Length: 373
Figure 1 (spheres, helix red, strand yellow):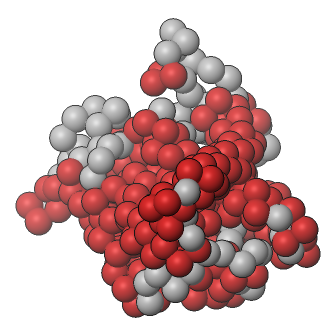
Figure 2 (cartoon, helix red, strand yellow):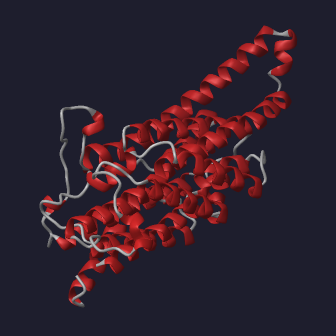
């Protein structure tokens, strides 16, 4: 049993590393596309800010560890978690290879759902669908309130906020130009590009931090889930001294410090490894970007992510930045958007949860057939 717990931790950290390089593009695609930073500089900035963001809360981790699977219906064993992680890892590698910015968050959620359904022999009661608690968002649980509604609404708000922020910036520049004199001079394209070239470094850092607040926490939740289950089964009763850190410091609502630190460092390392295929899709193929556009898209997306992380919602970084870029492109010129590229991205979104879930479902069935469950 202890070996299986350690395997869960190992696979979770592999997923975290892949999540880092798979989702690097989310933080840096726009700042690279606008040539404000070189790819190397952008990766260093994103990795550093991912690390900072990962330490800023654990609300999303708590949702993953206690708010998705109904443990009264299905036991969340190490085998279930390993199959869930394998489903998410497999889908991330497939979409990375194809250069598609799919959601690592939703791949993980799909993997959890698929493995839990398989372990529960297709009993849908294994998944928590409804709201629990006293109506306070901090106590709401379930796929409906914490996953599916945010999954649908966050891309919409990312698009809308991208349109609004860029529209506001254009309105300010137009007002300065009409004012004449020195105001008109700073509204010229050369000055606008120079200013937002510097401002975009700040927005890229904000985006990197927001990515860390949301994505790093999902793996924290998986590791915590494995440790809580192992503790409940008695597998941690006679640990050797060198594994004493596995004992949870608190109850099921607490994420241990070592889990936070390890996940933060591994995600930062993965981010530093880069994800150039997806950077090309997000930064160059959807719409041509200038520094003011990149600033608007990153600010919109990061704001969505930080808000979602506060409420413990595992929102997709990929969805929010992709739709923010689409919103910016729409605000500039709707005809400039490359619809065929957007269609490929949307199909990857639609397929992510069922695909990762299907892989995890099949993996658990294979584990049962081999007698390992």
